[in-house]
Amino acid sequence: MAEILVLHGPNLNLLGTREPHLYGSTTLSQLNESLKVLSAELGHTLSAFQSNNESTLIDKIHDCRQDRTDFIILNPAAFTHTSIALRDAMLAINKPFVEVHLSNIYRRESFRHHSYFSDIAVGVISGLGTEGYASALRFAHHFLSHASNSAVHCETTHC
Picture 1 (cartoon, rainbow, N blue to C red):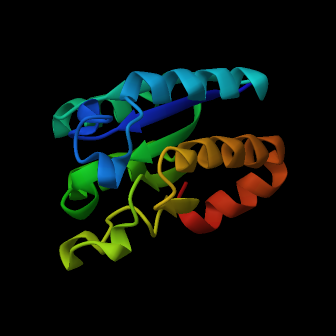
Picture 2: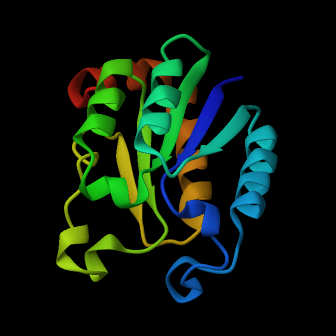
């Protein structure tokens, strides 16, 4: 059984009401609950955390050095394009993670096309709505189930 953390960045607390044409109508609590159910079905424990504050997210990431977190599903939201500090925190803890975006960042404004996380993530999922989180969770299960392959992969991707 693995411990999986889902980190949601700024404005995702408004999920379900903010720009539903881009982000859908599922609320953050509904999304987190569905992920917890899927995680349990896969034999893992999942916790979720959201903050609009960069330093709070960094502190949560740093906590992963001491707790039992095995894998992170990260939606840095707007911090994707701006936060070197969050990137450095992810590098410092050396945990595998998947970067997730509800909308397809490459079909949006050009400033959203750059990510400070994609090159250090195990993978990136963009544009699949809330199903992207479920896909990331299924991938995390596969990744953690094949630990010998994971170790080799992490050596080459900074996780």
